[in-house]
Length: 299
Ligand SMILES: C[S@@+](CC[C@H](N)C(=O)[O-])C[C@H]1O[C@@H](n2cnc3c(N)ncnc32)[C@H](O)[C@@H]1O
Image 1 (cartoon, rainbow, N blue to C red):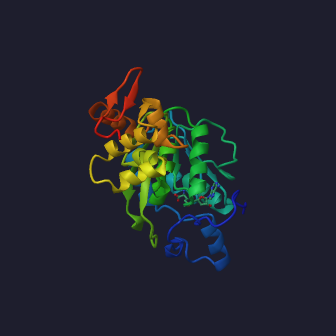
Image 2: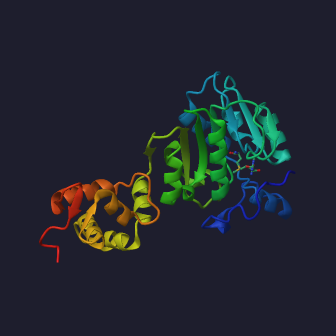
Image 3: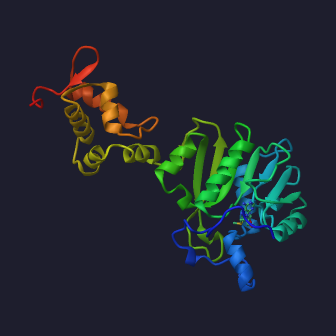
């Protein structure tokens, strides 16, 4: 069997690795270790069929599907015969099973390094559940797909648990995720989702809330973030007026943004609108676009 291109524990980033049993639990111990390292938890055939038909029911003979880590070929077999499809699998024995089960071409290799002899329009599957590997799969998928090309992956929800990871992805992809039951997989104790990513910027997100906002707030200067965390009301007014005070009592809009942002400005912080509203309501506009504290606050 080929070795994976990555080192370490595939489940290093997972919160509860001990709670997972391999679906293929009757293998000898040494093979179990390899199966666990490669994240070999096969999607049940019925679930692959349902997911394919729910999310990719519109595929036609003009599409070309890639299953990047096809295991024993559940998704390849689930695709209608008239839709061209191709698999990659790092484990040669599984690749052989996938070939004979689905009748599709399957190459043995690491998806991150294997040459793909066509431009896929959709990339569908259930990659190993490791954050760094999943992100690398997304990156390779982005390189391979045309604009509007889609990814559909079964994933543990923790892949999307932090705002910065999701915000970064959403700059290049339209994103949607739907929760699916963990007990689709026997013995799996992790919340799961089915994620659909569509290549192209500015397509928004469905099923994700407060991600951009959290990303913006967590990169603000600490003292302003603390005001937002503990403030009772008018938290944005407190932040804005306190920023003007820190800037000597008078400042331009870009100076106020810079003061609040700190060293790692986010691209489109949602709070800029709130700062502008506060300035209109609570501050005094001087000449040349400069804002000052109201008389009552200026010491
Ligand atoms: C979670 S299993 C899922 C298999 C199949 N997609 C399914 O849904 O049944 C992940 C598969 O990825 C394979 N794999 C792990 N790392 C890989 C890599 N870098 N490139 C290709 N396949 C890989 C494993 O051998 C395993 O068969």
